[in-house]
Length: 128
Image (cartoon, rainbow, N blue to C red):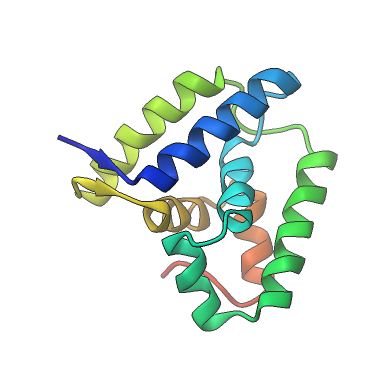
């Protein structure tokens, strides 16, 4: 049984809701990354703060947000279905039963098709 952290579950629900009501069904992973960065107290955010200053995280979030505004590429799935599949893909790719914001962070940074991955690389953060 896959157990998704309550914080990640809440973030995904909010991103899904916002995306469905905005009518923009693209770059869903980048939207998830932006939400993770803006939600205080996530496991992923705490890990990032160990190696990146707060002002740099703020700059990264702004760059991702600007990228979301200027690009129209990426996933075109219905957000609700995308995120249901996304959790199962995380479970399968990372071979873990517990899925947290850190698992999502690793996946997004490892995906070279995301603006988040490109932006984090500019700040020296990448997944090995």
